[in-house]
Image (cartoon, rainbow, N blue to C red):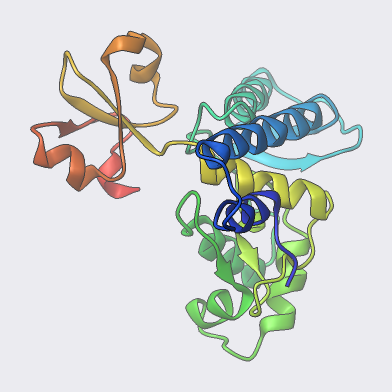
Length: 237
């Protein structure tokens, strides 16, 4: 099974000759490397959209969205992707338009979108979830043709044995995305308002750094008196 950089860091840390602090430094370096690698990708991708949502993301030139409404959607997607690649966003709010996708692929992509940020599932899990447990290969094909990668997180689907499997933008990008998500906080609260948000919520942009509190879950935030944001609805994540 292929391991990513953070897995190697953890193995080295638990060896007897590891120095205190090596793990934290190593994880930070891995996170920064993942951000640099994925950040460069943003300048190479093109985004197509309709007024209903993002319809295509590819690392090749695409036609400019036809209407002003579609161009606004594409610009919003680019801004959210930039935040995601910088470790400042743990969810996407921009809509997607999968109306041109076949019905089977729509089901596969819906299952992929249900995988929580920072987690992974095997292809067989997706096949089981859509009611076609024997269609593992077809699931892989549908994910490989994902029209809206990143926003529809097909990178969170791995081989049953733990291998990365295929990915439209290559294995290195897939590994970096998974490493990035492992080091990006999912929930943050504001100590002055006692509201907990998903990282990337518009409310988070107004938080002062000294008021920012990171939580492992919404339940943890509730236990110390925080209430969920009504905009990003972290309890539904």
